Image: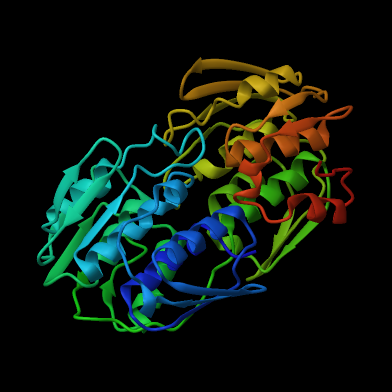
Length: 400
């Protein structure tokens, strides 16, 4: 499927131009609907037909992001840069999301970056207002590596006066895909996909067609699911090279697989070995695959140290795995030790966030008995039609 983390950045990029834009290979997930609703509330015309979205920004009539919509998903922050760059003003609430994506994740990097471009920031009780008579290029160093902040400032710099340099930038494939599209429409971006990005501002850019790249996190989730359930699964229309960190670990823990340029086949492992992981920005081990991998380690022989370095509250779900029978010791808010293999048992659970949600689904697939997972809205935010797709693979799963 098309990458959630690419789709949610290219939709706001449509605001950088007054021309019509076409987005292909769009996933059917809840956050996409919210992003389109936010556009429509701004007066932008959108049309959705199967996996293609058409956006006509000519009718935009305001730059205030609707709090009722923006509060519900973290990616709403991505609308700020393009609106500021093109219209020189924008107001918005603190972005929402799940338990790790709502108020617990500050937006200081974004605000500091916009300030470096010359924006005046007015903070009220419930929202922020940014104004800039003229955006000027800057030399900005990210004190924390951030994918969304890198993309947000890159889009802002496209229409700023002068040459902007972004240092210690994130290097995810979604960033390069976004830059490649913007360059094809007249932007002048060099170095996207490396730690240093240079952007020469232009007066305006065009709009065209963008095909969303495959979802590397979904690819990794299904690969881990195959290994955990001791199943043979072939994943098509994917980019195995985008999850190289995971595949190298598969070699070490005895999970056989084959791959091509756009396909990946996981074969049934005979014996799983334990392995320590430490999440890291791309090309390291993705934080978004940490929770599924933790479930996998409950079935491996030996002890595994799982070290989450990106998000403070991403290990909240391990208590539910313990309820299912997993032998997990919480060392501190960032580290757990998983002892395996252990037999898991079905329980009534609640999904705390998107990635933990799919981890609980994987745990339920290998558990004895029935498992009920509430708050599946979180899972639907990132995994399209997951119940039907798993039924197609032989799982006994249904949505109530």
